[in-house]
Length: 243
Image (cartoon, rainbow, N blue to C red; front, side, top):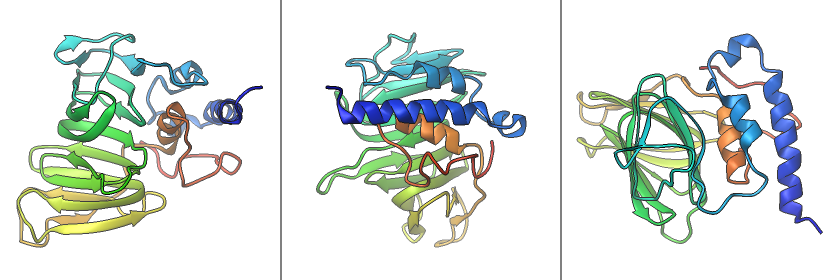
């Protein structure tokens, strides 16, 4: 008898692919170019030892040019060149790293303890942590503590961007102890900029929801056998805001 979880994933995948096919040209222009291609490649069960589920352009893992058989561990360095991206899994966490980006993971084997996005753009979904385990995402200007959520981050020299797509996070400035905020989000409710410089207590400011879509969140959650909290498949029709 087929496992009920596998059956559920099959139904979700068929519906997700059908939904993606109906996305309008306007919103589709902001998604990953290979989104539909990537959806079609997602297996019904996670493949042991497989990390990369879609990629384009120049992708490096631990300073070596990657291919779709390259293994990404919880301590790997992942980098992308221009016009490049990679969709990959580490344990129960899944990520989309966009072009011209560099992220160093911290952890052991397939368990992420944290990551540092030195530069670029990263969309991530994290499995729930247990007990007092807190995953830490570092950018150029902020440290974000999470226990299981969807998060989109951008890291530049003088400012970072963080959208808590759903879940709870603690955001703290790397330079100003007075600039910190706890955010609980259902659906991109409180995106934030975190500046490098400015008045003490005022480095975290409201931002728009930008540069990522609900389809992408559905994609990476599907890879690890979950679906986003913000919508059921039945009611899902389009992203809240396009890229």
